[in-house]
Image 1 (tube, rainbow, N blue to C red):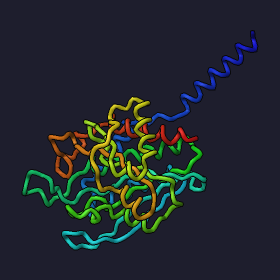
Image 2: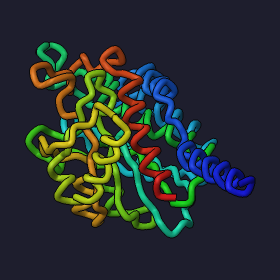
Image 3: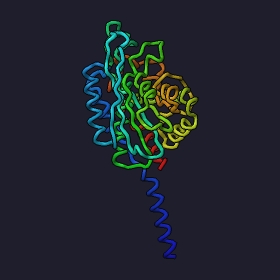
Length: 304
């Protein structure tokens, strides 16, 4: 009888250990990174805010990742014709592990609020609290989680520059950072990529993006199924829009089957803050960052 009691205690302890081994993602800590980016002002390429943000990312990631590098390239801005140096940032954890995955977000912001109702402000840069800062905020906090809780697989956190300065109607004029990355792959080819974009909306509704499902249907079903298990209410398990985002060049140019996690309607179908001056901190939420970050953490640590 005593032997059976000890066995039951051991099995219970093992069960509890398995249930608690996945770290907690801190949405409030991630939100401080979102606010910090917005405090620099717009981060459109060539701006003061752009340089300040670059320095901030490098300072944060260098203390956390196994290796941190930048991938620099030059692009000509479509309106000003100014030649500007841009930088992808790569933070690697377990770079020598056999299994490698990639999680990305873009860190630049739109140089023009071209969807603004104000004609006078259409040529001014936007703050990009959601479209720019939100995905990066999750990656920065995820870097802390990975640093504090070593895992067996290789995780590459990639911050793309120059995603958002394209011209409307010309898809390939966007996502210049991911295009350069895909053509000049600076890391071991990952099994797949997950891209986070516009994930801070206080009214979070993340549907399945159709191109993502075509590129990597199994990963899409795994992610949205896991979100359902975790009761992450911001994820909606049904297909909705298609969008040309950083996941497309990754697949088309480098053969990386990539999935885009994005909230299309910001904040909803009737109201639009995307590429306007309402894309501000007040319209974002720590809870939204928590949900997306929690999904990323569970996805990574479930693979141990």
